[in-house]
Image (cartoon, rainbow, N blue to C red; front, side, top):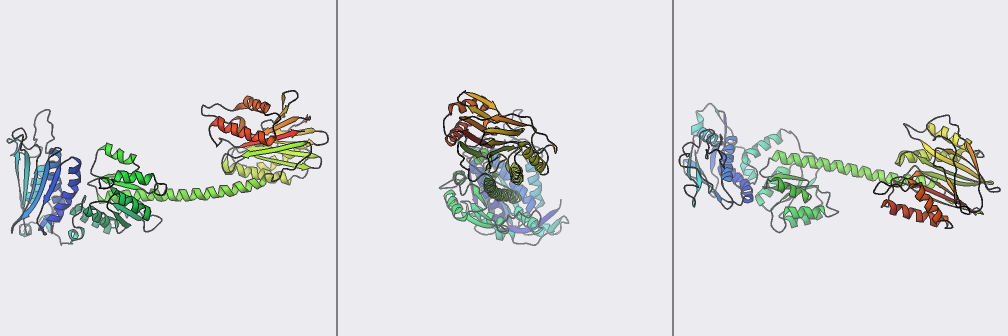
Length: 587
């Protein structure tokens, strides 16, 4: 088997595992300790294979040790050997099984209903890898059934120091020391082998982490463990501006001061936990958009859900891969940048809509001329910032001109068509024929609409000398006349298709004799089709009852009362369609 051997400090290498598994041990209620010389212990070893040796030994100790137990890791050396010792207070190994535990697929509990899994090929692989290093592994154990009060296992790995035992082996490649371990020191959740792999991955410029619109995004690391803070900084420093906080409270205050692009936080910390800090950040209007990634040794799905319920954007379980961490940060920052771009674009659209609303408002009559023996009051409420409903009111010679329309759809497209209609209407100098006005409008709108956009419209002329009204309707809801002295309603109905669908339209013209005391209501369908939470529409009958109840009330007051009633009916200050209401009284 091929071996790539390098001389590294075994204390640094093992300590990275010890710190990493310490978090997992704490989550199970297991006390974990690590004893080592107060100096470096250089040993030649294959980092990948030593990684698997330690992973198997530590994992087995965690798996077979219950809450309240302990795991002790120790390193000692002499002139010729380095000894790594892993002791636990787990269930132990039966005496008749101790000789076979290094065999492939051996089982500690061979019963048909065994409680614990076997060691599989794990310990067999450990033994093979230890022997490839010229070393040996021994096991001692006290099985729980045989020693209920004092049970557990001890695994001792002995590896020779120096490189003499490797020099004649053709399968061994001796690498030069690149001092990786010197630069990383003791770091939780990562090991020297992974750091070496990470450095190779980074130097090859594969999957370079995403850089946001700000070429130097800021990341706040909230971690009470100094070693973990140091290591996270080592991983992140080449891509991000890294800031540090030592607990949740410090993290929240730092977030207020720094406004970082992302927060990377441990969960279990003194003063304030990562959960509480996340909840506090997400409930703060100024900080709530900052992404938070929580780091924890608790792998249960309930713990992950708990973190997400506190508002965390992502959740990473220790021990984790540096690649995974960087990839998650990259993806979250990329998503955040997309959101910021969309927010900026939405603000631009909102600003444009406000300007469009102002422009559209200027297209509506700015000053309603006072006409003797008549009263007029308009109300226009767009569903969006701009809408497709539109009206006009003019006094020309002996005639009062009233126009109302409703464009299909909502928003900018509808507003654009209503703008075309207004410009077209203003360009018509001869308005003595209602049919003629609608024909000219149709011609102009047909040139401007696309797909199935269209406009319904009603145009009328009121002769001030005779109170005679002539009118033409292009598919619009017929205005209604309420004659109070008779308590009757009359619909101003003529045949006619909406504008903008067909180039050659023929509309009929109708006439109606107005009398003193008549009230004419022009409106769009947003009023009668206003819907409540149960799906019930306001409807024509309820609208007419309102008109009857409001007889004698000034048009402006009547309009305001109707809008309030519609808001109460639908349970909202916003309507599902544009609203336009014109009240015209003949005095």
